[in-house]
Length: 319
Image 1: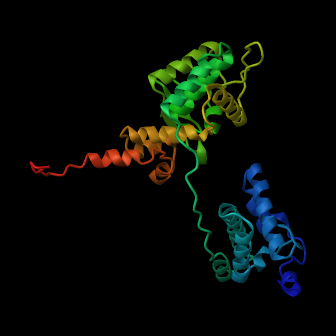
Image 2 (image 1 turned 30 degrees about the vertical axis):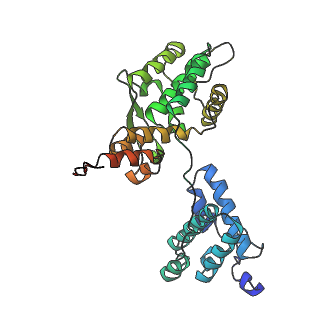
Image 3 (image 1 turned 45 degrees about the horizontal axis):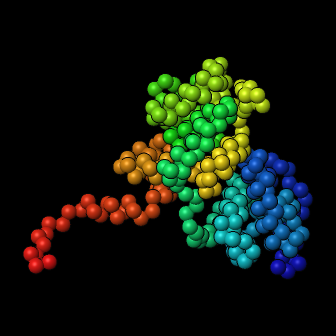
């Protein structure tokens, strides 16, 4: 862009943060997301002003369609499609705040955000674990005579048996699980509560852990000090990742993520004939369409499905 064009996009004077579109947008995000999206906005500001602006000195309300179209093109040349779409999402959100704050009129806003996302063609992420792999993980835990072995078995039983998210499992308290195997998930993704269930076999694994942990109120799964002393405080999501990596190494199971247990949970239920709406509710997904993205069963279920279609036909005798 020309120097004159760039100059028109630079704020003539600082805006109070309460009416700064970028600041208002970022303030509504979590701390982790704030850092990520502030970086995205800085990238946009740098690109459109040849490095003269950042997220707070760019006049977002001055952006028009020619600017946003140019930003999209520049991002496509510099970043992968998924990264480009993330940055474009931040751009749309800031422009929306500029409109809400009455810094842009409706016509300019509508035109400025009228650009498409970049199409992303990629393979499905993650995988489903086989029954043999799950058995190997559980064997690794059961072969560990320490309290960690019992706790880690309970962790895997809950992740695999209830399909909960990593953040949900560390948020569980003792009071959230009852003898029927029902587990109350409080404030899951999107702030929603739901009830999930453990099989009797999975609940028995958790019972063994409770015999070690004790029945005092507090977090269900806890850190353990050397010597087997259970600390009644909450584990971190990172601790879950490290535990699963350790057990995968011990059992010789190919690398997987904690979220792959959710993919396994959904795939196995669908493969057993459970309808997708029920699986959706158990997984805590917003819609069945999201649940379908977790299906990692491959082609075999399709082949089995068509075998159930009857074709009334009598074979000729000479065949």
